[in-house]
Length: 464
Image: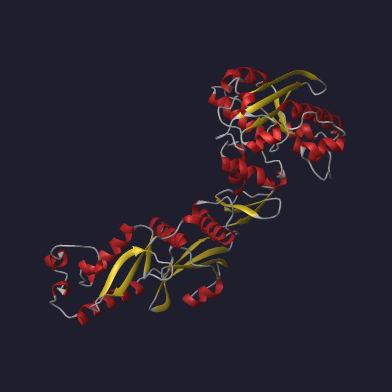
């Protein structure tokens, strides 16, 4: 009925590490029916810290079988039984990954003796295998070796079955139970209280620190998916190993959840969020006077201590804006770093008035550059997106002001907004976030009906 498994490995996640030893004890719930144990050659060096912990070194596994050579036997021992281990998701992820690589697909019920121990023996100071066995009078022989730990887990399972007067084991094995895939520190109640609505979720470690922030169209479905596939990747395994509590904030829509997720990642800087920490606009439109006093424009990589007139994630986006300014205001492409040599293409096409050929005054040219920059500043996008609220009678407002993300907030549908400054006073301001700015611009391009109010720089009245 049960296959009690323990493995030793070369590292913490299956996608990049191998198994060095495996022990399987077959158990019918009352007594041991059979045992299997073998060293395995992982085809990679065993780190010294693991050797110091387990005693298994490279010489010991050099002549051991490779995993594919024992995969059929392991598969046959496991396929019709309940997979039992202390922190079952770790052992299962390795076995499943390496069996799959050898051509065997395993999909069996799992039972975690850590999670079952918490339910049956409540109030223990620790549920690690060593501490739990010590508290229950189970002697572990050959600690940190697969055979010794598997035998200890087998005796632990017997004690758990005997003491389980409330039927926790059967509930954990019941179809649809979350107990088989959740991380060992996470309570099923944390999942059960999640709504099916859009929002942002937080993974906390045992010290109460946020280690991951995510967004979801359905909070419960998205959070469940983090743990249900038993991914062998390092990031997934570390996250599952460290998460001990889940928090959440409901949002009105998937878009507002995406915006709030970005706000929270920038605020909390969680350990396991990676992509948005690096995202930024890399280029900016800058102006400066050269030695002759001519104001030059150019798209350059953003400087740390200098604010550009406007920012761009891609160089081609910046060049597109600059080319339009040049044509609209009769500027010179050579003095805007869009042409490096040869006769001025702007003169040939009739929009450059010849500053590059000394045919107009510097003062006249500079005045048009200033007008171009003023035009760009005055036409930086300012608008609000109005999204669905978290509950009936509520709306979410997100404001872009002068091309910068200003903030967001939930207001009553009956709230009358007539001026830009009024909306600013009603929503929560947040630090400017260029990723959110880009998200908002893209969102209204795809959903123009969402931009129901637009605010202009030169007038505070609302344009509907």
